[in-house]
Length: 417
Image (cartoon, rainbow, N blue to C red; front, top):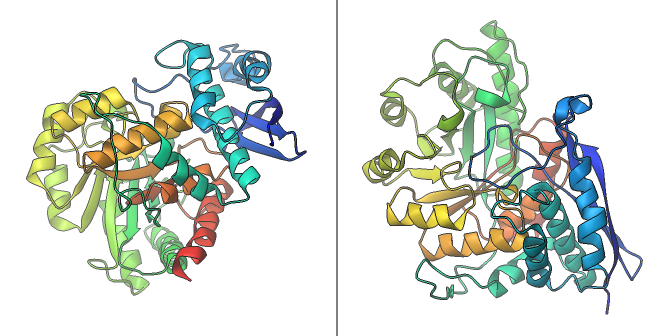
């Protein structure tokens, strides 16, 4: 039996040049597996704590040496000689060692990097793709609804499948130096059949969009997730420019390419026009809107969700990958889709419990990266493993984004033949 020999963690940099954690699991077989934690700029007040040192003489207070020490000194000794196949047991140890409802003691960045590394190690031991192992964990993970009744999903509900990728064309809000209040303008190549062709469409549209921006004398800076960080006076202008780029690349804007927004309303520095959503849904082929209202505005989420049944209204800050928040979203009929970010909750097991409750309620999944990313591709395997409707990992620029799309295309070869 292959067991955990020892675990070590270190501070590395994310895509914003800020500190994060990489954890390496050393197996008794001699193999090593690593995982690293992302972090977000716009965060829900309900998500797991990213533990930082707050020593403002180093990395402006953002170093994570304390969280690294928590892994090396507290977590690692407890997991030594345990079986990586026992994901639930190991994650439960992490939860108990932390002892807080939001991972404030050890840090959600610490627990997640360990939890993901353990899952990767288990896949290596079994010599199977990571998404296959995560799918097995999904089937085996115990989850219950708010009435504490066990959830048993059908084989169809737990079947792995390829997600539709959502590509970020423009960055705004807290993830870009621009005047756009909306955090992300997205395109979804919904009816292009092969994954490699979906990615090609995004790359071609992205390159033509750069030309369109230059023609309009707009600076084509790049935001945190790889979208253009140009400034506009009108929130509809980015959409019009994307339409122009789509048309020039000969894709069908009302069939092959649909739009979406991650509005991130909780973190907006300026307000959108009151009629923005209604006008956008009237003028453009919108398929998904993420966080159109503040994270506590349950009533308006409910109104929008019921007014536009053909649009995916997704909670992100609203639900924060938290079961308690998801139960409320289900009760209030606030959403029909939900963003899943493992670092919002802190362990693989808790992420999969959240996924099972959402699936049981008929809520579609949007698996998402964070604005501060690494080259870790765990989130891609997660999206495939849980059969997510969508996956959102930025634009086809910036290495930490491109590596995820390349990994998705590689996985797709097994599904598409």
